[in-house]
Amino acid sequence: MRLLFKQRLFSWLDSYDIYDENQQVLYTVEGKLSWGHCLHIHNDHDEHIGTIKEEVLTFLPKFNMYVQDQYIGRIYKEFSFFKPVFRLDCNDWQVNGDLWQWDYQITDAHSQLIATVSKEVFHLTDTYVIDVLDPQNALYVLMIVLAIDAEKCSRRN
Image 1: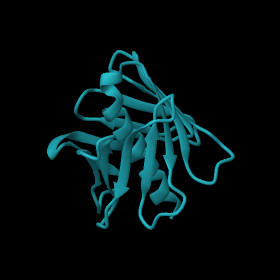
Image 2 (image 1 turned 120 degrees about the horizontal axis):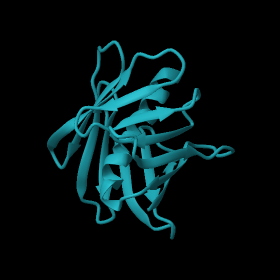
Image 3 (image 1 turned 180 degrees about the vertical axis):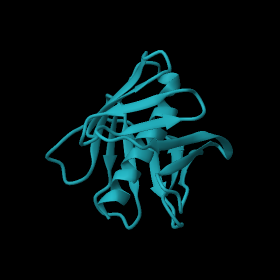
Image 4 (image 1 turned 90 degrees about the horizontal axis):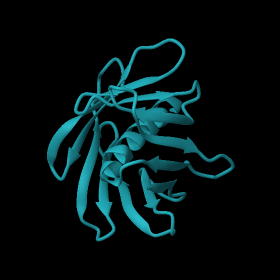
């Protein structure tokens, strides 16, 4: 399953549209005013299906993930010297990326590929191509991409 993740150009808070291969909107993401990033994910019927909420006042970035309003786990950045490493405490997935974090893979504890993410350059806003091997993992993968994008945005500011 391929998703195209596009940040909206004119928006006060973080907002994104996520399309399928046929340019149909599958998800919309709206940022909410809060301490730290708070992103609400809606499906194509405008139903709230998930939330990413950044924990504030932590040494390294941490984002809590919710499906509907039920807490399912956390994605957090681990200390590393040369390449960024993100972990999830809910399903033993990890994120390994290159030095600039523009391209990365999501793998399970046995190094089996879950998804690949690559950033398209020469766009006015952040645009990513997300290839998810199992469509049932699409929402979780989207949450990971949103958290990493929010972390990079915070680091730039």
